[in-house]
Image (cartoon, rainbow, N blue to C red):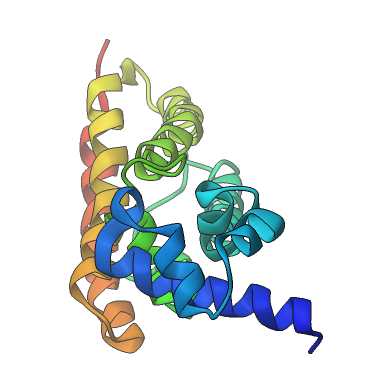
Length: 204
């Protein structure tokens, strides 16, 4: 590892600790650089600013999460609702793909969820909910087309988007062990799918 790469990695590790302890808004670039044995100028050299430093910690984990969700939503959009019947465990693949991504860098995800106020990432949960909404409205309309005299309950759809994403937020902020998280989230997902199928459509 070159000196520059080593310095950059030290800054990232020290920043991770500082953000976890104090949150983004109260984190000090001076404290971070001092802990790394460098000057604040090194922060600006490598990352431009504090948001850039936070991005070096969270961008890759966040991109991995978006990739899993987009693939899952895309696969669901192909569902044939004229024959589909939900059975227990038929959405386990989402948990099997998403939980390892969430726990691969638990500290980075905790910073995103709980310590990013004041940063450009502070609305990340709302952004994911909005993305979920945009995918699920198409899925729900596809479902409604297969059920005569029904239409999408848009309020319920938005509510379910919140509940689904917040189920994962609650999981990662309360359970630190990946295997336990994987076990606990699967029955939650079965319940959510059952409720989605039952309540997402209403009479025209």
